[in-house]
Length: 207
Length: 207
Length: 207
Image (cartoon, each protein chain N blue to C red):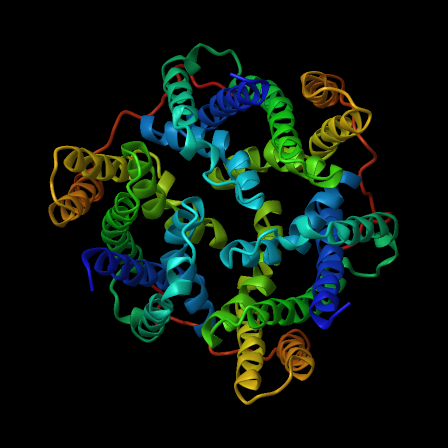
């Protein structure tokens, strides 16, 4: 199993858990858990594969990804009540999933010898779209767009790091973990210490 | 016209009616009716075709599907006021559309000789995604995710039946109607008699 | 640079501005602006390209589109506070973007020698889907579905004009600007003078 597969499996696993946690807050049944978990876990990579015209889509080529997502949903269904605060767990797990998924997305684009711009974008899309669909489908405000937090920005910084590191000749075995770490540090800093970029503010408030 | 085409046309017709009913609740104009009807009727199959890299997409290959959806939207625009309760009609028609679409999705995957896992998934995706997009776009709580109802679960049971029946050598002419019937019985049982799986409940309630 | 590229760039630019205006209303940061701007500007054309199986997707083939969207987002971030009413600016720019995008979508389908039905649909999809995703993602009521306004209808009339004009042998250099003008007149008439088609009204109101 190569590094890309490890990243893909990792992001599927952790994103599936966040999806299942969202399903638990919406009080769905077991199959509903598996559905939201799979949508979240496989959504970002599916959009990446469609855009890059990879055929077949990664989870059609290897349904183990799906099995991982469903197993994670099952595990959460029976254990989520043990969590002190599901909202908190959700956010931190989501930050982990984001970091791994950004690296997985950037890695796939690099393996296809795409340009730096596309590498950056595929990292961002793979990282952000699964969580975005999860939140839109259940009617939550997307975590991706939470005001005053680094999220898309963290994904951007991570994939830009990957693209830069490739440009300077680093091996993917260094580049991709670096990408995940940069993404996570920024996102975690935002969750834990309130790091953020200036947000748009109109003065005085307008319609 | 073979069985698959009949199923595709059937699900397009009935889903289009549900889309138009949703449009009537949102008080759109005639073109808005056609738009939501088409999105609902063609959405699930479009995602299925994109994922399986079928080219061209079914309604690009044969625009009759689109004509059916638009005709249904038109008919509903001029007759919906005759319905006693549009909400009730919507739910029951949606259950019918779901059942046919699940069979259509599973059937296409079988015709492409996909594995059992992919057959099950394509059944579920074709059945659930059109209605999901319909509800998300107009801002309703998706029927798919209604708490304490069988929906995704019914789709899963139906497509699993199809995959199993194929495994035991049954002909698609038996398999696919069986798939639709299983899906519909579960969904109808849920609507009519409140059948459901245990939903997730945290005790005591958490954040 | 041919006419199609001009239309694509134009719609990307103007839709990106509308996306950034929506981001300003949601008080996102600079990267959030770029994200929503890109989703809005590239979304409709991406769906068009996926459906038509164009490979690569237009902004993967030429990332300048993306650069345009990001530059527009940046410009809006620093200047939106100068606008008297962002809501009003948003609606009028959106009407402009719609018109250009409908022509771009119809033009691409014509360049691929698609049938009239597909030309009409690709115009509508390219025009409407970017704005629809923009509004769904940030949780607004989609402008596309605003009750009692011409929007999808304007897109339909514009692309139908294009398909008809092609049928009667007109050159794309005439057809596509005509398509944009028809779309815009109808949409602007709806915004400025309240033009609309009869909307569905049940009498008496039902559930």
